[in-house]
Length: 583
Ligand code: TEU
Image (cartoon, rainbow, N blue to C red; front, side):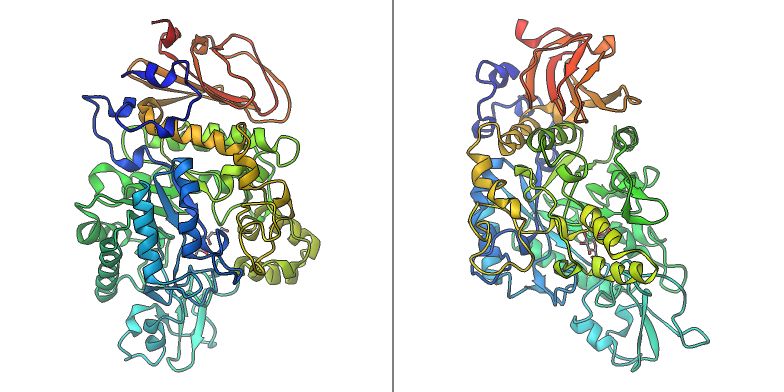
């Protein structure tokens, strides 16, 4: 079966219900590829996904109850943000027991049921592995604080006070304040690169590493599909020397993890890193490195931050800079390694608000952003609610925010002279809470998320923007995502074709082609709210079949295109520009 089966008259039919075996990727003789290279991931932020018991906090039975929604979307795995026992200083990114489930999220039985029910729908569960730091409530840390000879003292990173009794150096924590806190019983400071409730673990201690390998194997034995590794670049610190990102022991530890845990298992390993660069990326995920499968990096995100004042003073979106970053990373992974593709997650603003238009062109721009991202090479990640074009919530008072990063920086920024109004405006644009508001399932009070009082305000626009309404619309955002996700699963040129950027200096239009075995996909997106008259390079002119669109189907790239605001489409043609349908 060639693409005719997929792209014949029924080309807008539901590809995802097409049983595997008919797809190009499964054609006889095709090279076997790892499942996570054709799958799309979906991030669930458990606290805000679905509350089954009315306490205002999402939970694991709530997630299980929504698996059919995710199966319909066509995803291959869920990246589950942390569900472990935790005091929730950072909503679970502060783990007090690595082998227990937080009671507000459910039980281990609930977890096992989620894994089984997901598996029955062809969906794997990828756990969030937060091991750069534990919670300050972890038994290890409690012991460590009892004195320098306590059994777990050396599981953490300690330094003597400076001569004046203050912190050993001026290092700042990501969530505000010093990165060092004093423990009187010990007479020393411990390191916390995030909040004081998140003490950094001492990875140079082999006992600690052995505990972690064991814990990872314990979760794998429960049937999970892999790990997303929180701030993994930070584990390689030289604890007695400089405390660097991508420190000297990083790759040795990742290779040890691979040997001890990952090797020989059918799983996916995804390393989150804010510091990885095009120069270092392949050290994590190069084929011969035996470390991780892919990096989850933020170069395109940082591009939108003020170089001096950071995320709370956002820069206007610059498409040319965005394209440069995205295409650079595509180039790095041309023959080796693998990219994650995402515009948003639980730490980042809603993409339609940040990069698109969450007013007049909300639906169309949400589809345009999905199109330009999902047709690149890599594994796309959809953050909960993105598949219906959810927008950033706007808060008006600091009392509405819950995130420790926002609250920590609020105190510091206001003390440094920033006005309350400017800070709240910045937090609404680039803060983490506006993306963490509850999933909007219905227009009911509680948005179908909870029957109780939600832990954080629900976006008022849930009366308009919700899963029920969007899914009822054949031209909704969901239908578009479903189409893109199915195309990746079924068309090898999309999962694996070589990517070539075009028209890089154009300030409004993003264009790339994907080529494989004589097939070409051309993606053209108007990343602006204005109509754009655009003359594609003559090499792009082609007849073909429209794979996906958000305005009207097009069957050609002509030498003169009038692109509607936020119009995006992809054309499948032969590499010579002729249409595959004319065969
Ligand atoms: O985030 C990594 C991280 O460095 C964030 O603090 C990031 O810099 C910030 O959100 C951007 O302003 C991971 C998790 O994704 C995040 O939720 C956790 O808070 C953090 O690690 C600590 O575990």
